[in-house]
Picture 1 (tube, one colour):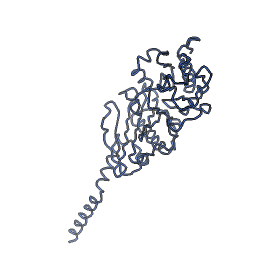
Picture 2: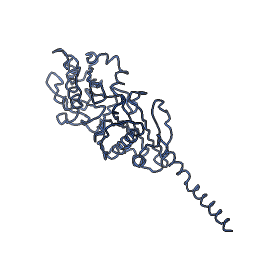
Picture 3: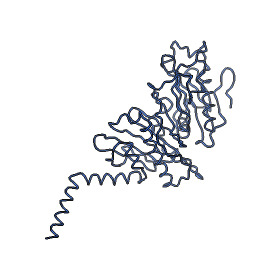
Picture 4: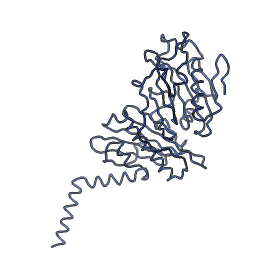
Length: 361
């Protein structure tokens, strides 16, 4: 009789377990533990996605050359998704796609550094946040790269706050620490991340150009027209170990004039491959398009760095007079590139020439 009672009680408990979703939770927990070979920081992903009802799987479009790639999806009302990719740098490409960009010209999407000693880049597009971080492996001719993209579902304000970007950065950096151990990458890691200042938003974070203290500082006082007027406003990236840096110069009406960018590591490599016609030489300019490019060599910051300036089409031909000096793009890029190269410990800067003389090194 006792045996029958115990068996009946066990069946009832099992029935309750299934009825209350216990089995689904158990399966979800197992899938999360297995995702990306079990190296994801579970608690930080839960914080990022605002849910403890998560399950892991493979991404819709698996990266064939990734060491690991996985997706984490939340159940319930949020229905968010986070994707993670772990790979050796330069293998498989797609560095720009990993941060939601196509390279060179974006939708006024500024970038920001992770900071805290990490070499990485963060950005956002709509409700999606992106983070990529790279570690240089000692004694090996390769670098490890971790990229994370996250759509928190109904929590659309996640990436408007330092805490939201901090959550995203922690997922990327803690995954990097675990990935480095698993795949034998002996590298310096940064410090723990608490919060990250969100990258500048084009519509909300314009500052007077003379208040620029980040990447726009070296070009904030440039003479943009025959009257000697400088840019009125700027949108900039804070200085740090970001792998992409941006500076947007705007006129007094808030119209974009020029976009200056610095690219390092996989982004510099991919930029050269995808825009070979533009970057056909180490440095140069095109007066017809108003663009210019430069290059520098970085011994300790992932090799070649590339710098570009492109005009924003909305401003061409306007009453700002920005085209009065055909050498203006090259002059802007010279100041920008020299500053960026010095901050990252790069040398041998190849610069575009101007009518006043050749580019200098």
